[in-house]
Image (cartoon, rainbow, N blue to C red; front, side, top):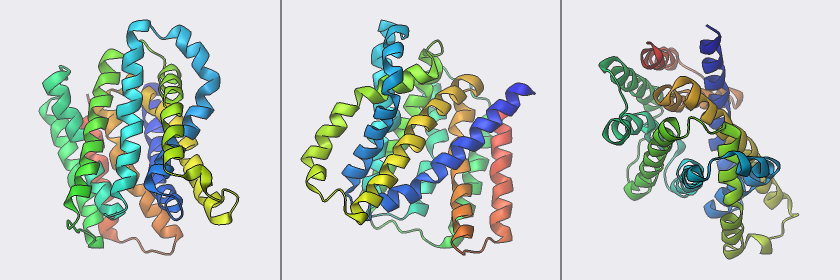
Length: 288
């Protein structure tokens, strides 16, 4: 029972953090480019985790260093840029639907390459959750596939997520969550600084209110939505398993609904019903 409580607590916290990330990305891109927002996100996460990197370098086995760095690239670095670029041409509802493919990629890649044992009930649970998510967003009527190539960027990001979830769950069980996150993001500090320099961020009027607010949104996104959330996610993968961890994707839209209520939108009974469908999917995946 205690383990279940921990699993669900991590699930809810991650849903809250990552569910708010779309608003922060949108706020950041009011003034900055997608490359600058993504770079500031990764950079701020790396800076926050610097104090832990030295200890992590001593504790992480040398033969796992490459996997840790690869985890940072697949689980955070590439997806951060892919999502920001994609959201310049597709709406957030479509991005949310495509992002929900993460559990499906997790299952398919896990079965194909990581010897993942996924029974029929777990697969049905993922499909049920995905159906609920589609119903939740469908009433908004924002499905537009004109920019199909940008939709593929989100699909590529979910593919990276699926690879990373399986890799962490299978090959890094003995590596501490904080060690994984700190080494991965500190390694990414230099590449993000280079990208910020190339894109002209440091030449901007950084003290101007608009630039400052966009920068602040990107930094908050990095500290909470990347650094802290990544540590919690690694913990969830190792405690609850890869499939349940990937189901966090389904919790994200509910936070978007909360933001909608806060901004004056109305929530229908249909949306409440969709929430129940998605929770049924989570239960089927987590049930032993």
